[in-house]
Image 1 (tube, rainbow, N blue to C red):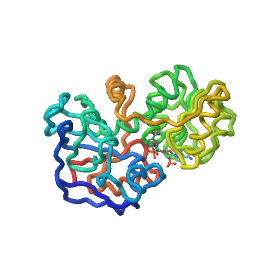
Image 2 (cartoon, rainbow, N blue to C red):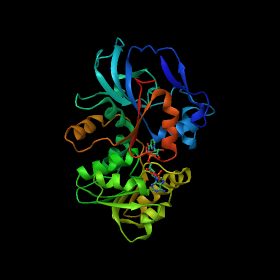
Image 3 (cartoon, protein in one colour):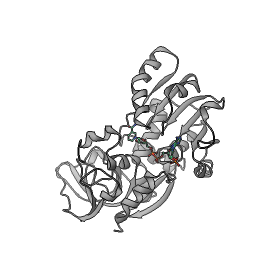
Length: 323
Ligand SMILES: NC(=O)c1ccc[n+]([C@@H]2O[C@H](COP(=O)([O-])OP(=O)(O)OC[C@H]3O[C@@H](n4cnc5c(N)ncnc54)[C@H](OP(=O)(O)O)[C@@H]3O)[C@@H](O)[C@H]2O)c1
C-alpha cells in the first residue's frame, strides 16, 4: 500500500510517499481502508519533534513512522476478538493511542478507538472531527464547566479546535468572542461568533472586557494576563501554546486555583471519548466541521506546511483515495 513515511524529525521535506507492507490486524484490531484523514497541529508538532513533550513518542527519532491520527474509512477485515465491528462498517476515530498511521491507504486500529460513522456524515466530515472536537468539547464542558449565558472567549478560534469550540459554545447558549488573525474573522462570524477580535490589531487583555470562561488554543501570554480578564469564579483552560506558557500554566495554574476564586489549568485530552456526542451535535445541525482545503495523499507535506504556516481556517483534509 502507499503511505506517507518519515524516519527523522524535521520540515515537511522529510515526509515521503512510499510503498510499504499493508498492515495485518491483531486479534483485537480492525483493518480499515482509509477514505479521508485530517491534519491536526499535533501532526505538525510530531513532524518537527517540538515542543519537547512530543518526544515522548520517540526521543531522537519518531517512534511511529507513518504519521496521521484522525481517520475515517471502511472496515475491511476484523481480528478474531473484535465484537463491535464487521467488514463494511464505516468508522472514524483518533489513532493517537494506537500507533498513528492514518496518512496511508490502510491502517489497523483497536476497536476502542473507533466510532461508527453515521450515513449522513461524509468521510471528510468524519475525519475532521476526532482530535480537534474532543479538545473543544472537553475544554469547554469538562474543564470549563460551561453554562448557558456565560461570556466565553476562544483564543485561536479560527483553527481546528477553535472552529469546533465556537459552535459547541454557541449550541450551549454562551455569548462567544472569537480571537484570531484578520483573514479568519468573517469565517468566525459565519459560524456563530457574537464578537470577534483581531489579535494582530488589538490586545484583548487591555480592552477592559471580562469573561467567565477562556478556552486558549494558542497561549502566548502570561497566565497573569489571562487571570486579569477572568470574572470572579471564572475558568481558564489552556489547550495549547508556547512551551514557556505551557510550563507556566502547569506550575502556577494549580496554585492560582487553590488560592483564589478563579480556576486555571491545562486540558489533557481523552481521545475518542466523546465521538457519540459529536455525532449527535452534527446530526442536529449544531456543529458542522469547517473544512478549508483538501489534499491528496502525496500532498501531505504541502498540507502540513499550509497548517504550520498558520493559513488554515478550520480543518485540512487528506483524501487518501487519491495518491
Ligand atoms: N491539551 C492537549 O491534550 C493537547 C493534545 C494535542 C494537541 N494540543 C495542542 O492543541 C492545539 C490545537 O490547535 P489547533 O489544531 O486548533 O491549531 P490550529 O489549527 O493551528 O489553530 C490555531 C489558531 O491560533 C491562531 N493564532 C496563532 N497565534 C495566535 C495568537 N497569538 N493569538 C491568537 N490566536 C493565534 C492561528 O491563526 P494564525 O496562524 O492565522 O495567526 C490559528 O487559527 C495545539 O496547540 C496543540 O499543540 C493539545
